[in-house]
Image (cartoon, rainbow, N blue to C red):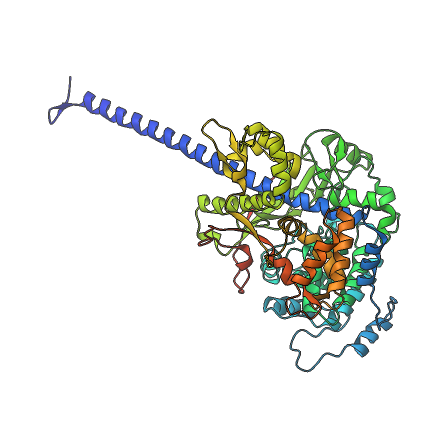
Length: 632
C-alpha cells in the first residue's frame, strides 16, 4: 500500500532525502579533501620557510666558529680580543669577599638612582624586586651587577661539571630550552607567572643560550643568576654555545652591555667571561636522563667530561664543542656538522651506545629551533626542547618547556608569545613567515651577486641569460652552500622562461645595496655588505671607549687585519680612498656603526605596509602568553 503526501509517494520522498544526503556527504568529502590539501600546502610553505631561516643561521655560525677556533686569524687579532676583554682595571680580580667591598668603595650609587638596591646574600624579595623593575624597563646599577656576577661565580665554582639532580624531593622539574632572541623581562615574567616562580617545591633547569639576539639579555641573565643565588639547589643552569664572549661579539650581547653600562661595560663583560667558564656543562636527573645544550658524539666520555677543568675550555675544545654544538640526525653514524661548522651530527646508534654505556634512559637537548617547540627522535631516546617562540619571525614557531616527574615521563607545555599575529588567519601568519624567509634568502643571494653570476655563466658561455633549472640550482648551491631545495624554491626567487629555463639575472631584480658613499667601488660595496658582521666584531674590539668612532689609521688597520683573515683581493689604495671618503667632517675620525648600517640591501618596490615585526612585540608591558599542554 502506497501512502500519498500531496500527490508524492513516501518512497519518492525517501529517495529524494537519500539523494540529498548523498550529495551532502560527497560535498563534505570534497571540502575535507580541499581543506587537507590547503593545510598541507600551508605546512609545506611553513616548513621550507623554517629551512631557509635555519640554513642562513647555520651559515653564519660557520663563519663565527672560524673565529672561535682562531685557525685563520693572525696573533694580532688574538691580542686585540685579549686587550678588549682584559683592559686595565682599578679593581682587584681576586675571588674573595673583599671584592664586594671594593665595588662598594669604587662605584657610587647616586641618590638619583631609583632601581633595585641589592644586598647580599639575596632573598626572594630581591628577585621579585628585580622582576618588577625590569618589567618596568628599569636597569640595575653597575655596582649591583658586578656584585651579583661576583657572587654567582663563587657559587658556580663549587659545582661539578655535571650536576646530578633527583625528582624525589619534588613532584617534577621544569626544563627550559634556548631562550635567546624573544626573551625579555616581560616574557620571563609571564612565563614564571604561568609555571610558578623557582622555589624548593618548583625546581628549574635552564639549558643554555640565555643571551644574544635580544634587547634585554643582561636583564634575563641577572634574573636567572639572582634566582640561582637564592635557590642554588633548585635552579640550575647548563652552559650553551652562546655563553661565549666571541659569540657575544657577533650576536649583540657585547653591544647591549656596552650601551647600557658604558663606564663599567668592559669590567662586566670581563667578569661575565669568567662566569661563563664556570657554568656546568651537563645535568643528569635520577641517574637516567642526560641533559646537555647541543648533543653528543661517538667520542663523548661523561667520566672525562666530569673531571677536566671546565674553566680551561680551550684545552679540551673539541669535547666541549661537541656538547654545545652537535645535532641529532635520523641516519646512523657520527659525521661532522658541516652546516654549523662545529660539533657533529649523531645518529640513533650513537645515542643508544652512550645511553647503554652509562645506564641512561633519555637525552634531552636544545640548540635547534623546532616548529612545535619540541621534537622527539631516535625512537624516543632524544628530546629537543626549544623555548623561544617566534624565533625567526612572529608566528614562525611555538615555544615549549618540559616537566619531568619521578616516573621520568616528559610532559610538554607549548606556548605562543604574540601581540600581532593572534588576530591574523593561519594563511596570513604563514605568509608573513614565508615573506620574511624569502626576503632574507634574496638578500643572501644579492650579497654574493658577483660569485653567483660567475657560476651561472659557466653554464651560459653565450651569455643568453638563461640556463636550465638543474644548472641554476647547482650554481647557487656551489656558491651559498645552504643545502636548500633550490629547484623547489626557484619559482619564488627567479623568473622562468616559457621553455622552463631560468632567467638567472632575475634573482637580483629590484634589489640593490645602498652605500652611503657613491664613490665606493661596486665590488667593495658588495664585500662590505657581505662581511659587515665580521667587520663589526673587529670594530667593537678596536673601539675601546665604545664611542662609535675610530681613527682613519685604526680603520686601515681594521681592514688590513680583516683582509688577511678573509684574503680579499682589494688593494690598499682603495681602502685609503674609502677611509677618507667616509670621514665626513674631515676630523680624522670615522663613525663606523653608521657607515656599516648604511650598507644594506633594499627592495626598490617593497611595500611593508601591514607587516608586523617581532621587534614591536614587547614595546609595552602587554604580553600575550598562551600555553597549552601537549602529551608525549
